Image 1: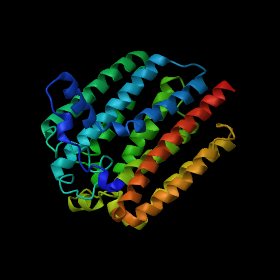
Image 2 (image 1 turned 60 degrees about the horizontal axis):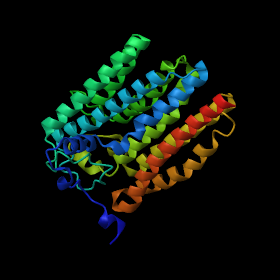
Image 3 (image 1 turned 180 degrees about the vertical axis):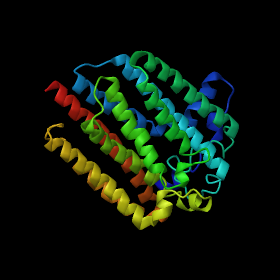
Image 4 (image 1 turned 90 degrees about the vertical axis):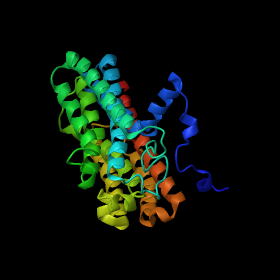
Amino acid sequence: MSQETARPINPVPEEFTGDSGTRSFKRLFHATRPKFFPASVLPVLAGTAWGAYVAGAFDAYVFVLALLATVCVHAASNVLNDVGDETIGTDRVNVKRIYPYTGGSRFIQMGILSQSVMARLGVGLLGIAMLLGVALFVEKGLAVLLFGLAGIALGVLYSLGPVKLSSLGIGEIAVAVAFGVLPVSGAAWLQGASIDTALILFSLPVSAWVFAILFINEVPDMEADGSTGKNTLPVRLGLSGAANLYLVLHVAAVLVVIYLTTQQLLPVIAPLVPLALLLLAWRAARAIRGGIEDRTAMTQAIEGTLGIHTIGCLWLTGCVVYSIVF
């Protein structure tokens, strides 16, 4: 049996049945698509490292609060994205999805959770994030609320409301800001760093890598998205244009790291790993050009993109920690 034949195309409802507290928690937890949580955890780590480096101190309490709040906003965004996609019908007609990466959690379509329960879960997670934001507000003041409200607005408007940024071809930018610039600069500021040009530049590779995650996940969904009016960037650009933009994103991330290194804001070894990751990016871009017809290559490209984000963010964090120690 091939890998693609063995790979499930939906969650198995029987794995989530049961009325116990443990089974209920399992349903709710997996509905948030936790495989993607590194996309919110790692930017906070990178920003915290930068802030501790600049300020010369580390505040563990505000770090934990910021991390939990960011993950809650991310989880809520994932859940509400499923609600929004069910409303317009794109997940129901998506037969070319690559589960568990594209096409949503499939919890609504498989009857594991209803759309109304998913909506309440998303709102509840936003409520928890807001409570954590209040705790940060007590510690750090009004600017915390501005960071938090901006992140929530971008996460929600990506999928819901009259705007639906994902349908306008700018949803990818919104996600790049919400899970790149905002958490990196916000986490650094919470540790005592100023929000200056250097910090914003440091956040841009993270933004590019998270943009790439969403962007490549949209490629298998192009047909379903386009048929329901969800005109994402891949829908608008086509496979060739999408492959070109994907590569540009990764090259731009490397160029920013090189620039920060020339300004002695990162150690001299900082560009090495991002440069090496371009090989994975090139292979993923080639898979994008082929589209969903080669499901194995497309799946590997998505997993490679997740790997680029994880390795890249950890490497940048490590480079900043190296600067703190040495």
